Length: 201
Image (cartoon, rainbow, N blue to C red; front, side, top):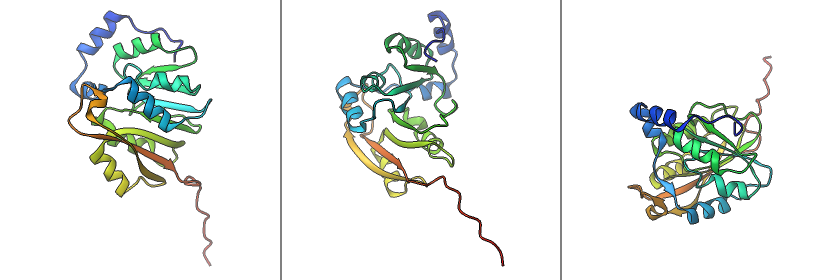
């Protein structure tokens, strides 16, 4: 949580240098430029007080604009150094978790996601967010355009899928190899309701 004591810089550096290759792939390295980050947060338009998760938050490109909308923000970042620096930048009331986006406990209450996740774990993250019983109400995810097209053709069960803003490679630093876009997922009302049992005659 935001009030927890962050690990020291030397400890963070040692953990980063000794991390396995699979972990470094999950850290990601394509940060949105500030102008694009604000544009995408404005497109997502979270409400004040709404619980919003920034998964793979990095240095806070999306986290900081989200806090300006007075949303209840939880930022999750696996890289120790980035998580430590983000804790120092966010205002009081923002929670920064140094954790894996594929392993931390998801909220049990309704929540939204506005995120630029590491592309290496994007498919697994979508599966987790949309699994049966999820409390996810909507998600705005920056993904490679080819991956967005796949979800448009076949949305996760219980969700609708649409394409949001196009995000060119120049919107990131450093730029990725592929063009990107925002995948917008919205929960279908009543998706978690159990079907009534039919009585056998």
